[in-house]
Length: 117
Length: 110
Image (cartoon, rainbow over all chains, first blue to last red; front, side):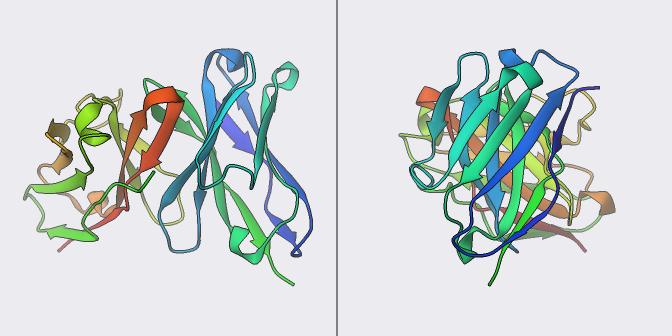
């Protein structure tokens, strides 16, 4: 079965760092782009960026460039999304997604990140 | 890149057909045939319903169809059912492997 399995929910304080993960299985991990999508509480979907694990080519939405870092470790079929200094406004559900046919055909279960003092 | 514009809500009675629009500009929707649509039920991850404007992934009901005219893409749900009540988002793939989502539409089955 093709799936993306994300790391568990996180509760952090403002200013702390965080790295969440997304592990792909059931397909050739290095042959598909993996993206990240943010959904703030009660709000819509926002595309953050995408990485090609085969060569680590990475693209970011202008809204998220410089705010987060996307990386991948193809040896363990895992993609990461990380923050250097979290803000309360980073509170959201973060989904990893597989890019195929210029769409997102597989979605992870989502990782809830709560940033609160 | 600005979010694509969708109506906030659309409603219909069981059995009816509804259409959700996704409006952009000649530089985005009008320039690319890479529109996809996603269904999201409360508390769940979104699900791909349509890709490349009008193609359905395996397993998606043929009650869902997509189209595009000029700068506006559309998702039509025919034979509306209670289970179709959800949020729907369009998305566009543009050059250089970047994407943008629509603002989202809440579909209510009356």
